[in-house]
Length: 348
Ligand code: SF4
Ligand code: SF4
Image (cartoon, rainbow, N blue to C red; front, side):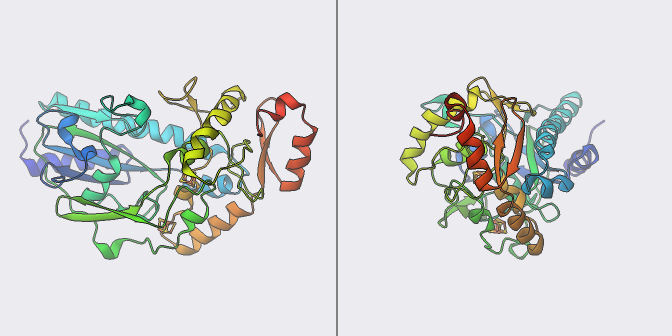
């Protein structure tokens, strides 16, 4: 079968939606022109002409119980839907291959450049799904730096594939479709204070996008990645049982890593994990993502989710790795009663 560019673009967009995506877009060399290095399609496939990018939503029913720290099931849903999104990229790339095009699927997460000074430790993505999603109208950049979709907010995973098929680009969203009203609840819920007020502006094609300039990535890596999670106030935590003191300065987060990561590796992990190439023993469990799951198109829902999180107590863990949320005072008592070697798994 031979299709013209419009027909093929339509088939591929329908395919993404039929396979389980909620939003889909197409970028081309032209619409990505002048963008940052992680919009260079040739670095994935020499001679690439376009890329398809799409969002897969997480299960919204699981968000409130997760933020209230009553049920950790959203973790498993996140792992499964992320893997599923990568599967859609593979399905579309295989389909394109079978009808005579070159196509390379890009997994949603943990695909880094190897040609930077520290290789994958620099965590520079080969392709930024977010830039592709903003340029093609899958969503828009919120203050947090997440891509916000009109229907599911930031509670989505992005995936893409690059191809030498000449596809028809989709338009970015219009400014008035952007629901981000700078409520900054994402920033207010960020325990390690990773999200800043300053903005970075990015030009891609004929469009300008902006979002917050993050502080040291180690702030989010150590907290969202599960090494530690207690707020400096002691009154709120992520799903991590880690209670290491959070430093104020960026440079001290690297020192925190030396203390918190060995303890993280020794702790039992009985819930499902992602496999990350750059983490010791490779098992990685997101215990936060709060900025992502709070952000919903409806502001009332955002505020409700923020309050659920702030009042959800703090996490403690037993010797088998079972976690539960308790009051801050109760957590102190539980930690005090632990033998010193167990305390060292969680505290300074
Ligand atoms: S939480 Fe508020 S400020 Fe943050 S990205 Fe969402 S809408 Fe924007
Ligand atoms: S995932 Fe958690 S630690 Fe990372 S930026 Fe969001 S709120 Fe902050």
